[in-house]
Amino acid sequence: MPLLGPGDTFPSLGLPQVGGGSFTLPDVLGGRYGVVLFYRGSWCPYCNAELRAFQRAADSLAGIGAAVVALSVDDETTTAQLIAKHGLTFLLGHSADAQAISAATDAFVDPTGCFLQSAGFVLDPSGRVIVSVYSSGAIGRLVPEDVVGLVRYLRDHATTS
Image (cartoon, rainbow, N blue to C red; front, side, top):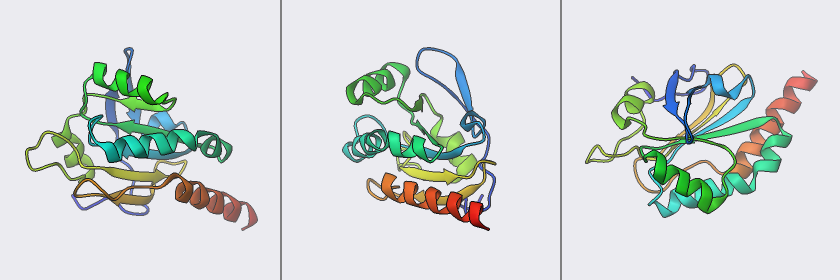
């Protein structure tokens, strides 16, 4: 499968959530603009910085009607600890199958096959990809301010055209 690009429909991905239950992407976004983040794991300092940045931008993202969802291969306990450590209020999926997620999205998997490399997607309200950012290593990811600016532009442009 080629990398997901603009206009592609984001694939349906089911994931467990902390505290029980599960959700399915992109359905969980409920017709809103969405940011989907694949992070390497709670051990990754770059991923921690990205998750904190998106948490700090929560009000700006909510103001433009965008929701954030993140996922990793971390187990439920590790994910719960990460949520508590950073006060994350957006949805995090845990126990992702790196190979299955990679097969569906073409996200890179580390050479040992144990975790997904970082990837980020901005989705429109219909679940189509607007922007995709794939990383093959520790760095290279979405920036919340860029996402807010892009979605604001798209919303304003759609209103005026």
